[in-house]
Image 1: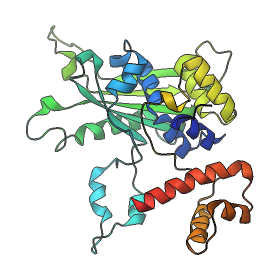
Image 2: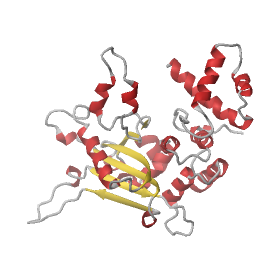
Image 3: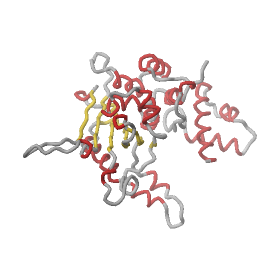
Image 4: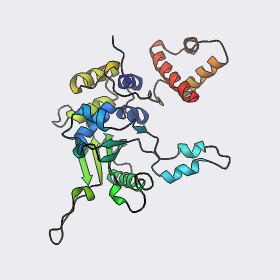
Length: 316
């Protein structure tokens, strides 16, 4: 039997908790999933094969909860002793997922910056669209000093902020909506090339899950299945592979990504630390520690993956 790839393992690890923020981000950050989001939501990719998007146009490894929304805050992480202020860093707002992509319409010459956000509540006390526009604005302003300097505004890259909403109001369910900049001629017929003003787009992808809805297909159905807390992992993998051609075996995987950081559900961080401490201070094996702590056999593989990630991070 072929070994499962990272996405398949993440689906198993997330279990039925895929709607939780940490699981959601790590599942969405897989290039197979990102390629399908771009294919449907980003006009530059609509005529591009999914495999090309995944393998040729998404650059590098997508950054998950790594880039601060307000980059100037990162300078405050270091205190007077030269050490990181962990409490301050943990309270910093970050982009859920952020990566660069090349535009196939420009022959791969034009680069854009894309942000994917997972969001449960469509109305969290403010208009979500305004937050998306703000995120786009931050991605544009933060390019100064990194993507361009001085008066070279011609180098400003287009940005997208795509919001995956798992629990939208009824009227928003099973919809994908774009908000962007357009030219409006008030007097006369003066026209500017589109690429000079078409620099930011916010999209809302609102899931619904109603099988009777004619819009419940394509990307909307794929994401609903992927992030559902009602569909079992085995069923998810079968649907994603058979209906959406999402690879679940190691031999078909195209990118290497870290295992997801399980922060909720059946894997408990305190127990993880306890196992590591027991192994350091005794001759007990990982399996013996888990047996002593009465961790169910069906959960031990998940603990093993979390332990491996924890130890690899500590040795990095």
